[in-house]
Amino acid sequence: MRNSRKVLLVSFLFLLMCAALALGLAETYVRSEYAFDEDLKLRRELAGEIDYICLGASHIQQAVIPSQLDESLGVNSYILADGWQNVYISKILFERELSRNPVKEVVLDVTCDTFNNSESNGGLERDLYVLPRFENDRERLSYIVDTFKPRKYKEIFITYTQRGAEYLMEKALGLNVKNVVYENKGFKDMDCKDMTYKKEEAARQHNSGQVDNNWEQEKLDCLSEIIQMCQDRNIKVTVVVTPVTQRKLWRLDGWDTFLSKLQDFCDQNHCMLLDFNLLKSRFELFPEDTAFSNQDHLCTSGAKTFTTVFCQMMQDIREGKDVSDQFFDSYKEVRENCIYAK
Image (tube, rainbow, N blue to C red; front, side, top):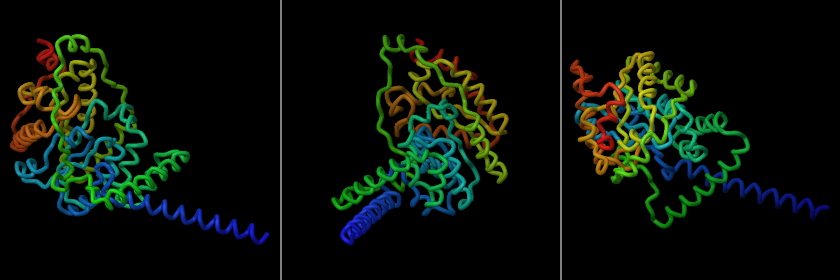
């Protein structure tokens, strides 16, 4: 009897030690800068200084270069975005930065996928990456409870334990374990890739897909809440659609429905919409072979061009100039003028 109690006690202590070790590894990962786009320490360093925020997902993260923005517009900007950041995550992160920074202007990144269900493709991996970006364990636990089903808790814990061990191993080997470049202030460098369709491929792909215009009301409401937070503080809000490739515009049908719904949303929320897919000069400014990293995102050279164009347009708007003549009225016109229509 005494031996069995001793075995049970030793077993319990062993399991307790294993749990403590695993918890320590998980906490090490969360507090490191090993996670994808983990910028918490950087944002803490900049607290009290940021007055211009670009908020959204990977499209704006790879389109706007803060150093150019700061110099051209005389602001101190930050790109509060990453590859799987949906509107719910954006709201949590934005509320924190709004509470500790003198924000005067916000650019909201919207894509054809912002309000539909396609963002769920990130799934668990997206949520695992975003947790270290939250300010404290209370925010992380709240997000876990609100987002995950209890059966996922074990998977989260095991994954974080493994990544904590990987982080310590790479650090011990002297490898670079920081995945954020502080000087970029949220911007992400991307290599260029030729995205040009071959003639026969363009013919085959034309209207082969459909823009998903089945928008979720909860996501619309969440973005409206972000806009309302800004308007309550007299913060200027501009909704921006960054350029995608002509091949994507050519491949998918339903773009003008997207535009109509987005314009209605902006009108209802009393904010300006700038859709740079409609920019008349986009064909010369953002060529398929040198401006993009994939069909959805600009590469760094494309981002430099875009930031220059964006800053000039924002300056024109500040001066009360009408910029509407620089845009097509519809995606139909854009598609009629793209290289694949010739």
